[in-house]
Image 1: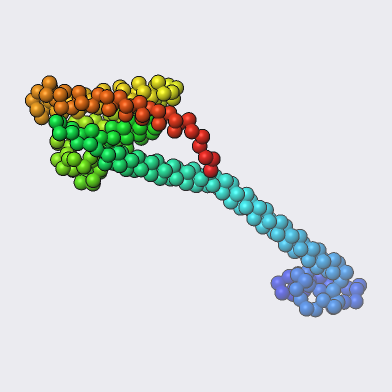
Image 2 (image 1 turned 180 degrees about the horizontal axis):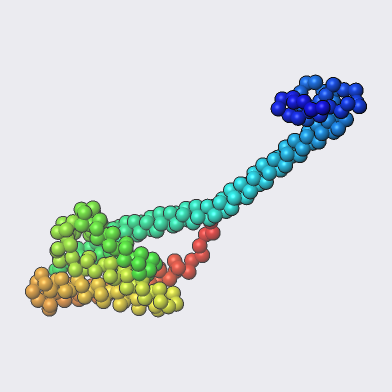
Length: 265
């Protein structure tokens, strides 16, 4: 005999004493269910448990995959973040070095001895320019003195105190010396970079850079005085001995500082 229970087919066996059972296993009337119905319900429960365990394992696999992806992203992001931080710190350090070196040149410019027979004073400024170039190299040396000129042109008290300061000092008798300072430091640094860091090389670099210094300074003086002989008399003869001493001193200090052991941080 056939019957229906909750839209499921129910089979009645005439030879057994039970009132019927439902295939779905959800009916409350299970007392008279045949043995195969109990087996069927148990199989359904086992199937449900298997599906739950399979789902749990799938979720665990998904979590594991997501965790691996996060780890890979962290490994990729960490070096990039570290590289960015290192670059930022290095840039900050380089800026601090350039600014500090420009202040050092400004301090050297304060040590000035005016001479009554020439508008060009005797100053330690040239020593500072040469030392910066020999120590920091061509690019940073050029940057330091370019910044120094910008500071002076802006009106900061970085030039020697015998002049009017600012743009007026750049246009005055010492303007030619000032305007070639970046080239002087850059040349000294470039020569020092391409060879052994010895006193002889540093001295040669300083002497060649000083030639550029006097070429620029005397050319500007010649324009102002309309006489090359007058420019040489005012801006060269009185400074030869002092410049040789400054070149040798800058070379000795630069080599000594370069060879000094650095403190490991």
